[in-house]
Image 1 (cartoon, helix red, strand yellow):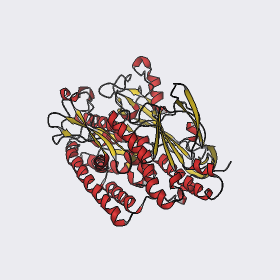
Image 2 (cartoon, rainbow, N blue to C red):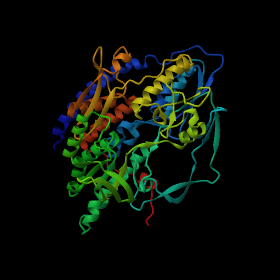
Image 3 (cartoon, one colour):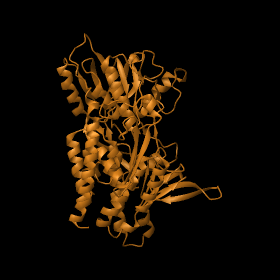
Image 4 (cartoon, rainbow, N blue to C red):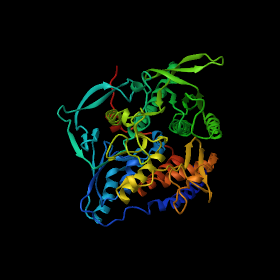
Length: 551
């Protein structure tokens, strides 16, 4: 396709997406009008510690009154990750560095506001929280080890190359520095980690897609599979080539569906251009154990997603459960035959991506166990909280949990985490007495998923009385009021599919990027990918950092 013909759809989509993004920005501007503007300085400030740098943690930091608190953000990850674009980064649609924002940028902005309000402290500590002592209001943290240039062979939790063994940088034996932090109020927003459900071989041989490093390592494997298959295609190793060119995604939720869609786009355009002798042999398989993909979506949207994914070359298999991952290139799946009997089949692949669910982090699991079931911590999914997001079992109500690590009866999504973070930040800001605040009420805006080839599915909520469409994350009516409780059950869902839904999806996510720098960079990435192709470079520094050994 010539450059001029590529330009037409690119400009069209950009125009529609700009309108959608503009509406999203306008209708959510008022959501920031109540930002902290307090100038009065209290006699003494409480210590507010926020664990995490994700959606919920960031909103607490932005909304909390820094005149009332000395705020400390603690996380081993020194940046906010814009997770909706992580699948696109995996295939080079956007660069990894353009979907992150250093947490110190937010700390610096909050610190300047705090300084104007009386010199309150806002700081960041790069460390992993190991344990929480609610009785003494203390948190034990461990600083990340320094790299001394030594390497040691360790089992691969994220296999990078074909051996399945990765060299990791070994910390100095004495470099296990621990620090103890005090707090008056603690917000736990550490998210969750991928769940393997005890499936043998998943932790050792599968790839995940929850963190930035997961995406970078997976991108490297995809490109390595293509290069290795290209080198072998002239030989008689047809079975080896077909294996390398088969990519399997386990999990039919939004993450698995969007990764499948991005892979199909990558194959249809860039692989066809750069590896024309391989393009027709590359396969993508999406496995889902449930009867249908995109379970939380309307059934009509799920059906559309299946039909469209099949049209763009993705093989969708529902009712398929992975029972074992036997190695870097082999797994066993269980399906049901027409007569109802279970059938197990071996599956060969170049890479298997596990996007099948989440589980609690050790910090959350240990704290819940220490509080005990009698105190209300009776869930294996995380910390059980009350209607004001306080962790049950902490008698003085000083510990809160939000997002994926909290069990609140709501789905573990970025939309939920962001709303909880804003509510908690405002509650802490407006009076510092959360007990007197109105209970948290979730306002579901809808759901979206990209399904490939400039198409998406959108389920946006419509609510009386003004019937304004609300977006996936934060679109609000211009006056900013959440729907009345009496309206919640009567709100209808507007379903969009195809190109209009794609413009809605892209415009919304573009408008919600956290900084002008990110917006410019991502916009350029999208234009580059559409006009000139995706970035398929495996940087040598990255390859050395993930160097592997041969078995």
